[in-house]
Length: 633
Image 1 (cartoon, helix red, strand yellow):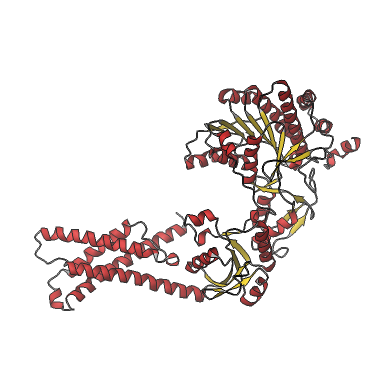
Image 2 (tube, helix red, strand yellow; image 1 turned 90 degrees about the horizontal axis):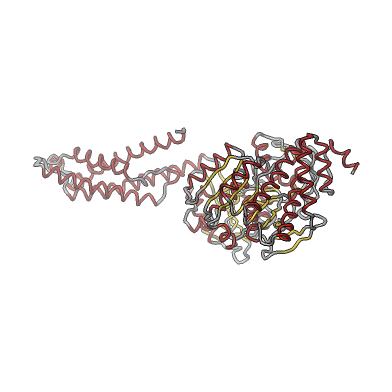
């Protein structure tokens, strides 16, 4: 039990004892009122025994009533119902106890009904007034002892009005709402409970200077990402802390309170609206099917499994080589208690024999292949591992899918496969080429067979090894934040978007397609680093320095989603495009990929990279150890 937990328990029992004492005194006062303060008449009744009995029963009721416990900062009118419940329970139990005692032929007069009624009324008003007084004293203390937080609410509609009421009820901080901002000209110049409403964002700087605004709460249910980003950027410029109300779902459920107001996340700064897909064909494809996910314990794989399980497959097979990560995701799924059978498999996709056993035993209908080595600098040092995992393992899984009549196979690729400058990207490109060639070959030879699809996207926000958690860790450690180049850019998408695209690709696939999202404009990594520092309430340079390290081995300045020889087509969804590659001869690429097995025996990084370049001529490495090869080619 933590210190805060112990503190809460102590406060809870102290308040129960105080309330019991109030109940005890209420009985004595009720006797005085009922008997017109005549002490001689009171001697005919066991007043103190009655008071002790009522207080003891009340204490039991206080303990039994689960919703009764309260804390001063969060006390509100909802506590009245709990007080009524406790008093009603105390009254009922006391009446029962009185009847039992009277039937036992006790010589003393016991608890007149009129005294019980008066006691209940006194108890109710005393407990309520006691809470109000404590609350007012606490507010007075907060307002005079704690620093003031001056707040502006962006949004003067119903959401903004509700936000004002919620903030006013919060007694933990001394906060004052100084103004509303809104983009609606009709609201400008009006007031809400005496608080003025100003038009747009242009007044924020004046408010900061005049009212010492420290915080801004975005409280608009429907706001474009562009407008949200403009507001956040202005807050960052002015040094104002920005926060945002919860989603509309939580409002509908009535769950909106101060604790649900969240800080701005880096996802809120995407340069485009978040993409949400709701294709019923995805559900139809997965429902009652055996689904295999490789790399299931990774950030993308685990979210993919969460989305798949909502589509009711007959069995979800989660395959990963990381023991701890696989165990953790299994425990998470067990805690939710889904009805769908789940089978975690600890296995390495590079183990051909083990993979063949899994396909033979479970006969999956759908395979989502998300397992891969993806760290660019690491694969520059160990190209043989990229070949084993990203090329040969992918080939083996694709071949097994054909052998065991898998209906759909979705391969998770990357934008680094386009005009690659590193081993990791080139290895993913070769896997793309093999899958495309295999799909074309099967269509020509067999007709109806496994449908292959490839998804290609940029950096995934918050995924393992991505720049976001790296920057976050560096900021938490006090800096510096390392950025490779001031002009480097990347495309970004959320984990949820990435998984939606993977599932959508499986449902839309006709064979031999690469699916990509319209991810808007690329984001400058330097701007991302600056905003993350400011969102952490730190000052750039004075508190957190930014250090430029230069491009790492194999790293590109700007990523691409479509190659020079590829064509892009629009699909039924305006945000999803299909990339068409030039046809590749299956026999040729199959021989080239199998040749890697021989090169691995030779154990020469130079020969491996030379062969990669032979398959992917557009691969131009900027790694220092391979510059000679670039000149030769």
